[in-house]
Image 1 (cartoon, helix red, strand yellow):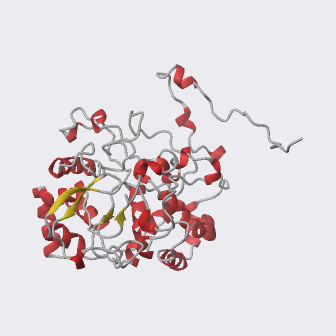
Image 2 (cartoon, helix red, strand yellow):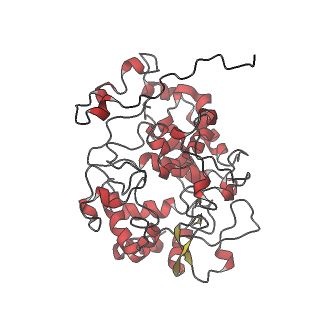
Image 3 (cartoon, rainbow, N blue to C red):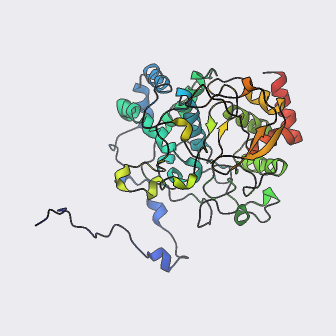
Length: 392
């Protein structure tokens, strides 16, 4: 008799048609029980704000700083530096906040859970959190995931040359997905923006309390409105979306330029070859998603947004390179190896090209997204950027 698995299979691991499916207008009382004390994994008297005071802050920052350049074979760092990845993770954690209902944001570590952990805009941020796991394990309950993810972004900037003004700890973790946040009615990822606007040509008609322009995005589509490049039109969506995140034009320009001074976009391959997102991945993947069969151990083969390339000449250094290239060259529309729309410079000097993320003997064109080009062509954003350039 051949050996078989001794565990009984065919258990009810999926609910099929639920009561909510039968009576969609029924009052949902589940949200009254979210984050209930009965399911809280912490001891009844645990107080994170008291626990974090026991933390050796200097030792923690030293460990996070060391992580930035400790490239791992299973997920190699661009140019040997994880800074860009960690900054993206931190921003995408904070960037879900919206002022209409005060929900979202980086204060609870919610990026670890569905749906955020599997949004198309968060491709491979599961790797960033997995890279942080040894540090989380070392310091245990003295550091929350919410604090650690934001701290990683702050330390990343410091390691690339941007001094910080300090860091405030105290973000307590949630321990299960949030059920009371409305992310939209769409039934598919990246459904056209039209579904959440009264008129997609009038950004102010976006449904409240939403701020992101499409289901599964943190803010705007980097290729343009509904994926169609038009920087002036994109500028209007950028302005409305970031206003709904409590940011004015100057803050938006600073965030865009500062965020895109370091790191890169990833689209050097076939996006359709990626494995499913974490929530849809098989159990043997241990919580990771978006497996890339074409990585071949090279950071330069990664695929996330589909746009491919760095914004600046020195993507691991915080400098004025973003403005130097954006305003120093004319740009034309091209497509990435993954087929995404992106802007590339015309007649760029060889020395202004960033080197390959894996092979420093190769140089590539830098890129700009449609939102980056909005900083140049929109009169208000351009004036703000020119002020930054005049007084760096």
